[in-house]
Every structure is written in structure tokens, then in C-alpha cells.
Image (tube, rainbow, N blue to C red):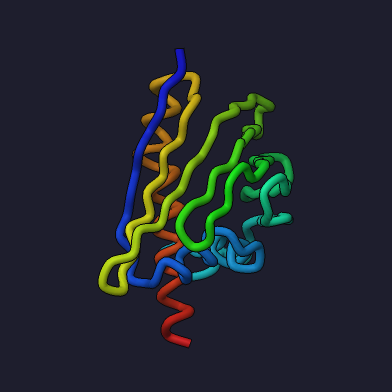
Length: 153
């Protein structure tokens, strides 16, 4: 049996801005580090990506070299600025892996964008609940901080 999740957040930016923040490798290298108090310069964030259908995206992140998370994704659909679908595999620092499909849509109304994530193929309710309550909300928080910094510049 597999599980799916759906999470969303309304961001104060256009669909183009949110799409670019989510997909642009240079932007990801910034927002992956953005904590509530600003950039976490001690964290490790290495991201490379070929943002096109069939392109590979790879990320490594964590607080120390011996406790790194790794993710590899292959873009299955890219409809700028409305939709991204990626087949993703994540490896935890202890070597366990999980594969799933992540679909992100960007729905703009009145200059704000609802970013909706649907992740399918999760192996357990525990992982689904962690991603729903912690991982995705943390990513939304960091993207939101990144967009505020860009708008203030």
C-alpha cells in the first residue's frame, strides 16, 4: 500500500516568481539555507539541476558531512509557470531511501500564488505525516523568506 499527501500555501508573489524560486538551482541554494533568523551559513547545501523534461535534479543537504540527506529527481513535466512533476528518490543519512512522485502546481490570483504539493507513492503513514507536518511546511517557510528577500532588494 502507498500513501499520498497534499499540502498548500498561499505566497505573496506571482506564479512566475514562485515557480522560479522553486525550480531555479541558484534560488534553491539560497532558500534551502534560510532559517527564521536568516541564512544558516554552516549548513551544507549542494544542488545541481537540468530543469527540463527528462532532466535530472540532485541535492545534498544537512548540518554535517556525516549526516547528509540526498535527493535525486527526474523532471517528468514542466509547464512554466503552472506545474512541475518530478519522480524523486530521497536517501536519509542512515542510508534508507524512499521514492515518490511530487507534483507541484502554482495557481495565481490577485498577485498571490497558491502553491499546491501532491506527493504520491509514500510507503507509510508516518512518513506522510512527517512530510505533511514538518518537511513541506519548512520548505514553504524558506521559499516565503526567499521571496520576501527578493522583493525587498
